[in-house]
Length: 338
Image (cartoon, rainbow, N blue to C red; front, side):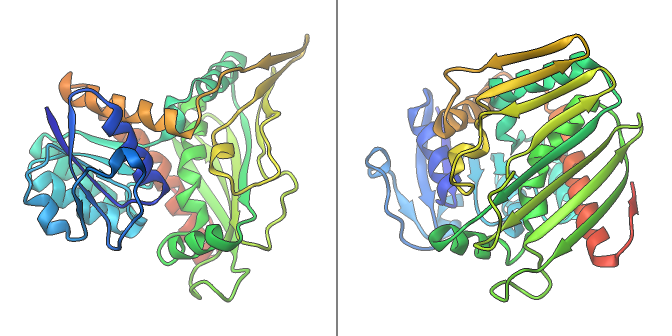
């Protein structure tokens, strides 16, 4: 029986807790949040704590971290030093040095470290990657995820932006897709960004765009913006272009750009080849909770079957490095070589 604790009970933390609750061979020994939290019926019998020290005293085998980004690295390191394997939501850390320190700790202590790249568990996104790779590179990647967030969603985004920009927080997902398709090393990153609200820290921008160049000649851009001022026009662009055609996500956009379910939904693919177009309908796509279930099943397999996670970790570091380089570029006003 794997004894698990979940730290941070926002949308992602609760979803991961529900996934572990439904899994075989897992006991949730504590749910941890700094403030009281209304729990779904399935989790109401779980021990609820506000003190992380009390939670670690329970000697968990697995710690799931879904807190704000700037706390990911210190909690992950502490969990592994306490004897636990770790699943941590993306981004792994807010600096590359902190991310590498987490990886070094996992290697030194022989702990499993899994980063929450949820799209890697989504069959439709894996089909997108396969279709793009089938066309052959080099590639042009055109991607964004802008969110017109208001009310509680804007409050959540403002809290996240106390330490992390949208470009880093969301960008790691889609940059990871680029990296899986091209399988080439990034060599140069350029970023632009702008603070569009007085409600966020002066050193944070709520709109950002990155441009990345890869060693095989592929290039890509990604943009992310949060806030009530954001446009919902073309807020979910996912195009991959090659000399032999293009693959695009179609039919996925909803009327609410801040809706979490819509951030992973594909709906359909349009594969354009020089010989003609093919529309691929992707039915019965997993929802957000089903994807979190799949993530936690992978975590448990990694622990029980001793899966080699070297490539997983290297990929997580690479996508984070690109986004952090873009953040640096925005702050210094010039491109960054990798």
